Length: 163
Image (cartoon, rainbow, N blue to C red; front, side, top):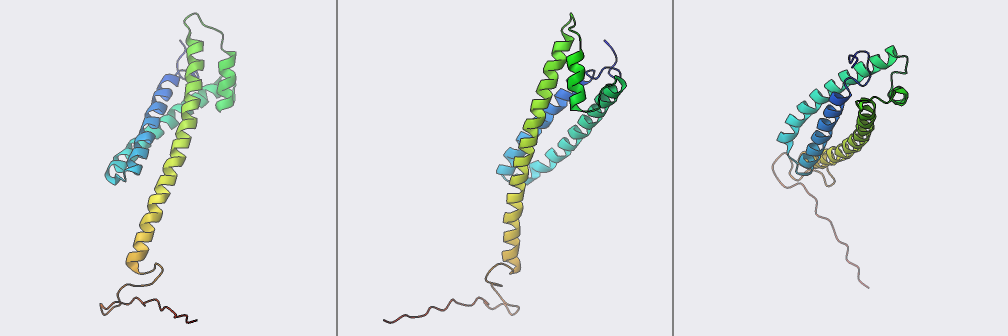
């Protein structure tokens, strides 16, 4: 089998494994965001960064191999390269195509998970900002207590309608 430098599919199995790991981490992140488990999120963020960095290295390696083989260094180039692969007796071409399809599906699913997690994060941020505004007295209604410690809220006056 050609080396991974000259074979765009040479590191595809490792890239697929990293994508599976990232997908798993994004699911865990979503669970922890729903549970508001901030401590768990910190560790996940570090793990995600490591996996994403490795995926970036692997994709760059694949892109270099594609360019060296005369194909565009992008997803369309990989697809064209895979289509041009002759069927091998050992099934490596079919396995590479299958891995590529799974990698693309995982990337799409991870993108959606990441989008959903971003919405959850923004929801938490908005809730925290509202709570901070109340504590600072910048929420509707102003300060609850003035600098002298006395209640500073104005009672709503009700008009009496006689009729």
